[in-house]
Image 1 (spheres, helix red, strand yellow):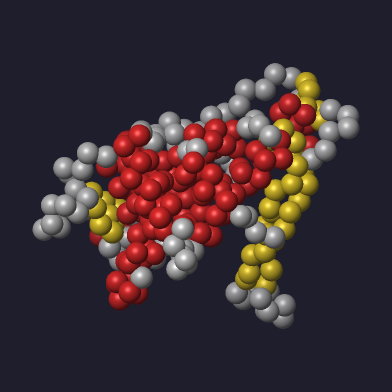
Image 2 (cartoon, rainbow, N blue to C red):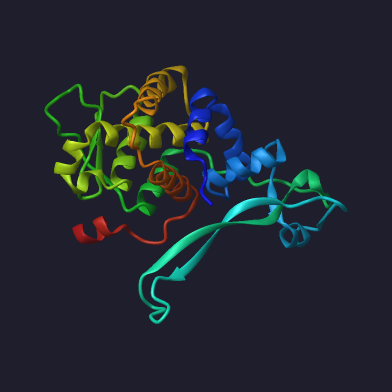
Length: 261
């Protein structure tokens, strides 16, 4: 079973606010599972397993049914070599209940961290991506990413955040690693990176009319293209990685900084 990423993206393009509602309520889960939870509960509210609520002094009301989310199962590709290459398969499991399906002690939902310069710095550390001075000769270029997992943002850029997420998207999607492949599929790569930026901004509730306008039109035009071959599963994986990195405390210096030391 797989998430319907194109449906999620299309909904986000029409109503980016719903992505922030989902993320605020379900930020511990992937964007795909956030969508599944909202559709089944028909609302955005905290979810936990039966035992999860029990540990917080709440019990599931009699007659309530659990919602289903995709759960990862990891298998060895070669059963005779359990330490070899593995494959992850996602299967639905009915384990989660919404807050309104429970009763008991008062519950205070922990909100996702506020987006600050320090939080963005920690995100970059967790993603093993570093910033570098902008040195592009074309002043119309707002940012770029390199194969060394570095990104640069034009200091004259009026909206640096969506550009930052766009360039990080390029890195996470592996675009700078093969410049010949990027040049051959540039339109697709740019649509993928822009989708990463748009979805990340939407989840974090950072969009303005200016930032979402151009971005949404660009992505819609590509989704309507009969030659659309965007790798939406990788786009959403990149968004999940960014949001996870934003919430975590960095454990150590990224490899790029270690190498420079």
